[in-house]
Image (tube, rainbow, N blue to C red):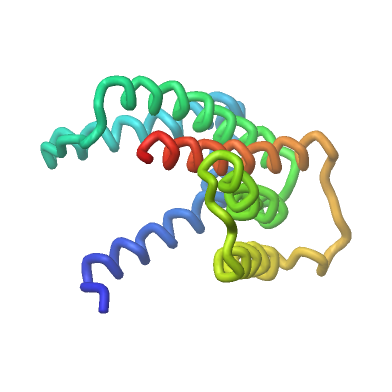
Length: 174
């Protein structure tokens, strides 16, 4: 049984992730999309660096891996946040979330060639169930589809970028 700190941390992450979409919509009313994406990524970077300094965490990776992580992370984060924020200027939050959350499916697809990881029925089921849950919460299919093809494409590419970033980081650690 997980301890209370783990459960509280998990609950906090769920709430923060869930609030992403309304906060992005609110932020877009004050800021251009690329600037908002830059501010989000920068605030995450600064928070992570502060935590690393406070906790005095020492990494288990060498300099080559650190450079590779930086080179993977910058475009991965940039494409993910940038395309997500631009796409969400056109589509409502629910539709945007469904397109972004194609990333577990992309992760399964990319895991085979990049990691040599064959998708098991459990992994496929979990990815599809999670995607279906997002689609259900967003009420996809209950209204007529809206949005333009460019925004839809940007949001799908953002989900792909997040998946590629995750798979490449896992490969880096292998």
